Length: 135
Image (cartoon, rainbow, N blue to C red; front, side, top):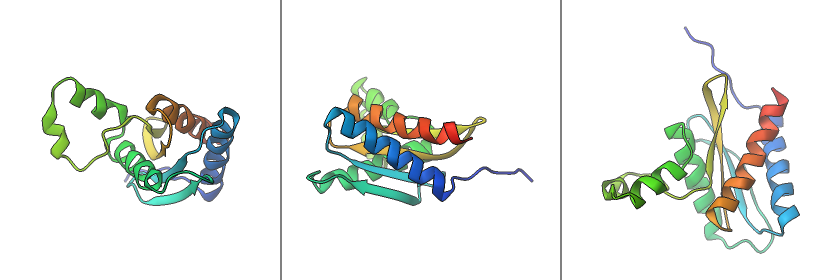
């Protein structure tokens, strides 16, 4: 048997707090989703005035990053480079989903939606770093 790491409630809260702080520091209005390694929702926040659709997109980005064990940006780039077949896969092919990797193991992911894709990723990475600092 193999031992598995798992996110705890304190990790989720640290990620949400750090991501929210990064968004606030830049004046960005977003939704932030945190999922476990199987893409099950663990935490979510939609900042005031963030459009409702950002909630769904942030979860989709987190889900994609968790299940694929890689940033959702990979699929966006793959499609841009001509692999249109990936459009038929049930994933969110937009940058802004980042897996949380600990000792080579995916323990979850963070997805952000509401600003430019690279800014979404910046916010998600702030959340990931907050989790990694706790380990």
